[in-house]
Amino acid sequence: MGGRLAAWALVTLATLGLVLPAVVIIVLQPKSTQKVTTFVNSTAPLDIYVVLDASGSVNDADWKESLLFAKDLTLQLNQSVPEFRAGLGWFATTYRNVFDVTSDLSAVARLPAGVSVKKGTTNTAAALCGNAFEATKLAEAGPKCRGGAYGKLKHAAEVSGGFEAVSGCEEQTSSSMIIMVTDGRPNTGEAHGSDLLPMLAAQFIKAETNTTILGILVGNPQQANREILYGLSSCCAPAAMALGEEGYPRCSEPVNESCAYMFQMKDYNALMRSVGIIEGTLKDELQCEGMEERIFTMADSRSLWFLLLLVPVLVHQLWQRCLLCVGKSSPDARCLTAPDQEMEMTAPAPTQPRPEPEAVQTFERFSPRSNWPAPISILQICPWRG
Image (cartoon, rainbow, N blue to C red; front, side):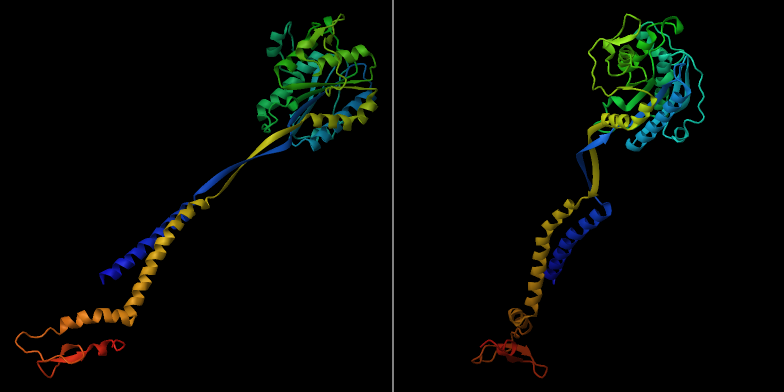
């Protein structure tokens, strides 16, 4: 009886060793994380501020064309750049904001309606850094450049927090851009305080910020005007900017004809026709190959494998138990245990003489009719022995 209990105890323990860990694993649900990094072609986010020349040299028809250009370019970029915001302003003697940098382009879609201008001179420094901008050297330009196109872009980034950086595009220089459309050179000297102001404004923006200046010259074929706008644009490195003999900014480096930040149009009609070209060029500049990381969380099935180590133990105990059951129920097992049990039951009384044994070995059992034990043959217990 004790052996049977021990066998069942071992079987029970082996079973619990398999079942309990499995239950714990299922309840706690252990998980494993896997990080997968893939290379993807990304498009950097873009904030733009389009600032249009509204000086006296721009007639009403050309002004309408410039507004339509701003509208079409903005809406097309909104379609091709996943994360995009835009703002609009104009400049003459002073700078005026039309609408702030935003992802809601409903006001753009209504252009040219709702925009009125006041003609005047060409105050390029105010267009870039605001009407209050004053400086005599680059170190003074930073604290004073708070308005204009740059001020609106900076304010949008501060208020909304900007776009989330795309992995691999963190160093993309064109994530913030000023698009300046003008038909002439900036007015300098007494008209706007200093010959240095346009150059200092552009130099600060290009050197100290992550903002790109794209210049579009319309309807002025003079090479000098092109060189001036080229020097103000991001085609010219900040350190290469210098004042020319006439007091206008120039670039001391050779002109890069393939630079993506300078365009020259024959007239405003040509400007309208070039929207697709400019949009495609800007989109190409925003392309970058980045790395995208994805973290997958999944059930950790590996923890279940160790349960297999307990399977042989369970099988071994079950096999022993089966052998024990088979042995208990077989005739051989009965023969192995019966003689001892019968011998204990038929021990003779010490005062009675035992009869002579017969030819066949017998065991004795007590008969209810006599005090003498009645003989019984082992063949009666195990008839297959003989």
